[in-house]
Image (cartoon, rainbow over all chains, first blue to last red; front, top):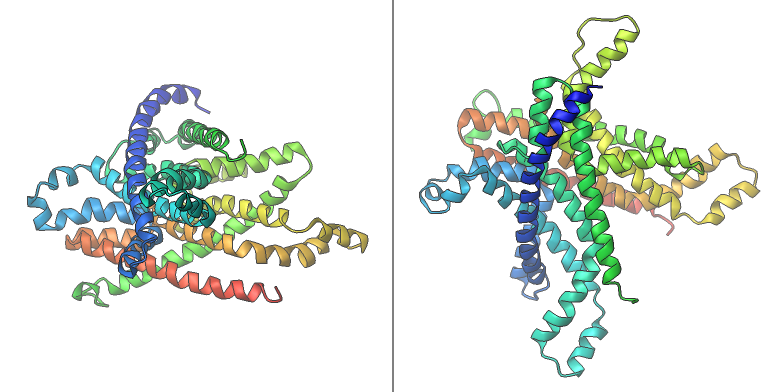
Length: 225
Length: 230
């Protein structure tokens, strides 16, 4: 065991954790918006809209995240039209490519989580709202969405942890996130076990925080109290 | 389309073999995972606290740490660890382990953590009366597990195991970083030499979709087979 290396690499890895957290928070934020949008589209009665939303979630859940990042980072640059448009400012940066890929990926999973949450809402609750003369719009925003969010908290907590692990793939498109820096230190020092313990410890700590935060939210918004 | 031609002019045959490699790695990793699950599930369900801690440590660490980091650990640390063990037995030459073995070992350990959780859940949801009835009939622990618990457990575990299989299949794309030529690596090589990354990565995505679709169909059949009589 090389404790010196563990001590010297800790600040470097902690600095890289900031990149991981930035990637995670940005992709979760945009992913939640996309997820909600597609969950609503999935519940639409129009078969084309419905199938489109299903196709999106099937495509992104059926392929590895690595393929999605590579298509966006390496693949999209090949299209001449995109390279001359304003989008190129975003798409030439690995940072934004990674965020786009993560957003689309987590959006697909989130839409499935929210859809099943919407479907488990008892029809009686909506009927009660209707009989009180509340408009459809308010029923949706004030009754369905809050219940669906509470319902989907445990599954969404898992999704956050999966996404946190997913951000490690940013290191494959030259970003120096926690895994990227860990790999760099391993390949220069050839001490994989020490670096794994430190980097893995940081990841486990983040998992622990997320897990407990979700548990706290579940308790706070549980129905029985 | 000529990019996908079989033979020397296209990448069709290379990608075909790469797909077979992906399937081979996934299946091997799944079996390694079952092996680990068979060790760690009893530990997690054991009455002894210390054994519980070992079992929980394994599943918590593996499920809380990114797959890529575990793969790097095996890739850079694998041959070092083997050489250390070999040096105890008096062998000091350089040993290089095959990328297939390191890759499927790394993915196998990850998939094992998920399988352990699935098996634990399945065993816990079997009615307590089944265990008691076996005890009353004087059946020993070994027969009790293989003849009574395991068949019932499999039925409950198959839907969740199919999730584990999908995760494992998708995780194999990550071993491309170690240089093993599976779908992702082959697409990377092809994209590099033809300068057509969009086409090859999209084709890789289609290959993965095909694999997940076919495996889902097969698993659905298994599910029907094992839930006969329910």
